[in-house]
Amino acid sequence: MSTVTTALDIGVGAAARLLLDAQATGTPCSPVRELIDGTDEAYAVQECLTRSWLAAGRRPVGRKIGLTSQSVQRQLGVDSPDFGMLFADMAVPDGAEIPAGAVLQPRAEAEVALVLERDLTHERHTIADLLRATAFALPAIEVVGSRIRDWDILLTDTIADNASCGMYVLGNRPVQLADVDLRLCGMVLERRGQQVSTGTGAACLGHPLNAALWLADTLVRCGHPLRAGDTVLTGALGPMVPTAPGDVLEARIEGLGDVRVAFAQEDATREEGRTA
Image 1 (cartoon, rainbow, N blue to C red):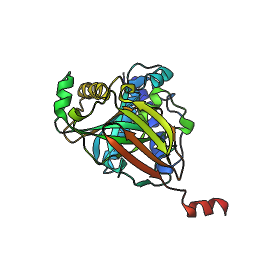
Image 2: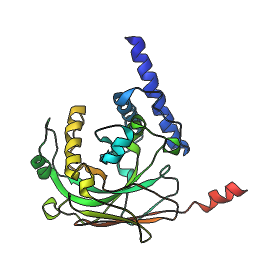
Image 3: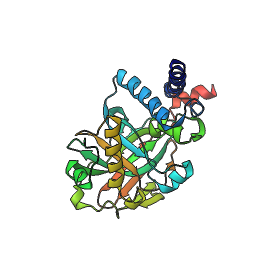
């Protein structure tokens, strides 16, 4: 038994070190799937990253849900979403600029965010539980990133890598759930006025609340239930799009309003260093 446990610890620990080093150096690493076995070990790697970040003083503020699109699930051969941690230093003010290099290999997607006002601690929640627990909804842009080179990921890679979470932007106008139809709400994501992604709430597991319900039940089983004050990014409403320095993205979600983020140009000093 000790040999098996040691082998598990080595694989999980090695994967966590690769991902932490990639973030620290700004250089993506090779896939970690060969070091771990299955989703349980992938979440163990994510837990290692979380403990390291908490020890460094980062403040947790919620969760993100990934793999809510059926097409992406088919691509990775899975039939359920995954989840990752949100920290306060991942939050970007509406309309602000993300520094160059802050997210490795960034891509963006528009989502519905929920902010909770009650804990969700039941073993199995209902939609009514979720409605009562939600203070308001906001439009959001999640800037996903991968610490794994060239986005060469399978399910275990993205779970281990904190569900490929980078940063996120929330709109500033809270909307009550009674005032918006999240299933039918249309989404348009534009880059400098050019449409680059469209979708609806139905693209997110049929309804963004379905995704949030899955997360609430899953986290109770994991022993880390959602709490009052948590922000939940419920998953993409349309295709993810690549980003580049200088981009300006704006998402509009029917009934929720708009949210905007910019991506800084490469630092001039760094550019001079490359050409010196």
